[in-house]
Image 1 (tube, rainbow, N blue to C red):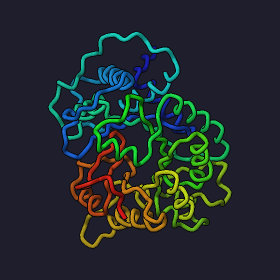
Image 2: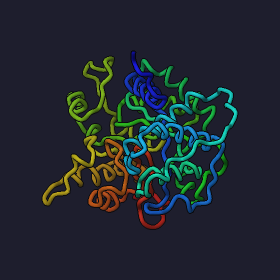
Image 3: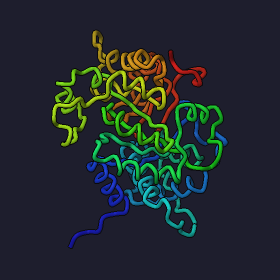
Image 4: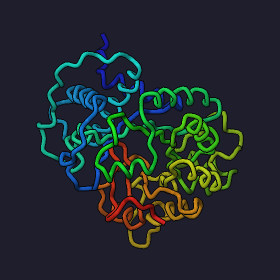
Length: 349
């Protein structure tokens, strides 16, 4: 007899199925303010939707073994994704009667810099951004993408770069309606040709983290580049067409949406060496922002996201390189962290 799968596992399976089908994955990112700050010190108050999200998160957390370590970001990312996916599935349905929240398990372990408590406190305080992550958005999926984003936009308020900076300045959103951002990774041509027009039809700001090396690659070599750098290629587009958006398309997007670097080669921290004489950091951290600023006339957002979603605060050498390059935000699997010193209200360039 098979053992029934847990609620968390069922949610994560459905989320993975959506990813494999090229559909969006709802997640929730804790806005952790300045790096090193204590989220509990801010004055933001969670909305009813945020409180329900945290209650679901606690219920899923209770499925884990009691000795699960506080700082396991893989577990945190899985639980936050499962809770956010559950929330997205319930949009438009009658809310269940509120009961007492399940006991938090966060007291079992000490505070880690980026551990369970830190993320949970940020979410419980209303410092949360709903994100729907997309990768390839081919033409044959346009109608489904429009229907999906329209559903999210009916219940959540889209945000752009200036909205996010205003959040950091105020420490809270201007009201208790959930905020969200549709994010389209890698820099696909169909992000510019399909996803961006759909966002514009719906009055949404899209977020486009692009791999600048993908954009610079000659079209005849782009499928090989993609397959060599963990960038999926839709079967309908395996006909030699240009797979990456052009620098000119990135510049046009930056006039209406948020365009930011996602490294050059779709690399993670583990592939980006800090050794003497190495040019990995220049290629993957500094050059992508400089190129995007050049292509977009200074309109690219000074934020970055590592492949694999590594947050700020775990790798001091790479963190220093991110800061030195002029990035103000790091977007990871579980958080958006403001890392630049001084006034983050001004864009680089």
